[in-house]
Image (cartoon, rainbow, N blue to C red):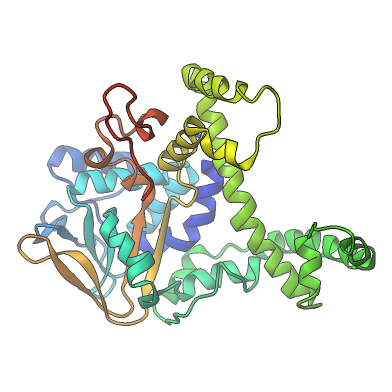
Length: 369
C-alpha cells in the first residue's frame, strides 16, 4: 500500500465519496461477480434491479435502498475504515462494464459516475462554470479550513446538504481546535516579526507567504484560512507525489538504477532549471507516479444549471447526455488511469518507460493530456 493513500482517501472522502455512495449500485456483469463483490464489501444486491440499459455508452443503476441508501453509506464507511475505498470504486466500475453510469437514488434523483476522459474534460474545462462544489463540501471543509480556494466557486446549491449528517463526527470540533490553535500561534509569532521581515525585504528578492498576507489583511482568521488552504493544495499534494515515488523506487531496483544513472551525469552539481527539464526519465517517473497514484484520486461537481455531458447518449453512445440542475457528476481518476484500453494490459504496473519514445522502434510514448 502506498504510504500517502491513507491521507488522500481521508481528504477526498467527505468531498465526493459520501455523495456518490449515497446512491451507488454495483452493476455486475454476472452472478459470480455480483456475489463476490457483495461478500467483499458487505452489500446486498438485487439482481433484477442491478443494471438497467440506458444506451450503448452508459448504464442506469438502481438503489437497493431507494429511500436512504444506507447500504451504500455503510459500504463506503467500511471501505474508508479498511483503506480500500479506491479499490472498491474500481471494482464497481469494472463490474458494471460501462465507463459512465447514471445512478438512481433517493426519491428518484440521479447522479453520473464516470471514468471517461471526454466527460471529465467537459466537467473541468469546457463547461466548468456549469458546476459548483455543492453545500455538503463546504459544510465539511469550511469549519476546518475556513473560506479559501478549496471552498470557493461560482456555484451555489441547496441540494444534497442533508448528506452532511452522515459524516458529522462529534470529535471534529475538538480536532479542528487543535489545528487552529497551532496555526494561530505561528501567525502570532510571524506578526511579531513582521517589522524585521519588511526591513530585510528591502535588500532581498525573497518573499514569505504569510508575511505577504499581512499586506492584504490583519484578520487572523482569514490569514489562518488562506494559510491552511495553500498548505493543503501546495504542500500535501507534493508530499503525496514524493511519498509515492519513494514507495515505488523502493520496490523497483531497475527503475532506481536508471534514474540514478541519469542524475549521476550532473557530477554532484546542483541542476539548473533547464537541466531538470531535459531529464526525460525523471519526468517519466513523475508522470507514472501521478498516473497510478493521482494525488486527488476522485472528486465531484454539482450542476448549478441544466447542462450536458458531451458523449454517452443516443443509440451509439456518441450523443450528448442531459444533466439537470442539482445532479452530481463524480469521477475517479484512480480508476480511469488503470483502464487497460487506454494504458495497455500492464496498466496496473508501475512502468515509467511507457512515457518515453522508443529509441529503436521509434514508437511514441504517452503524452500528458
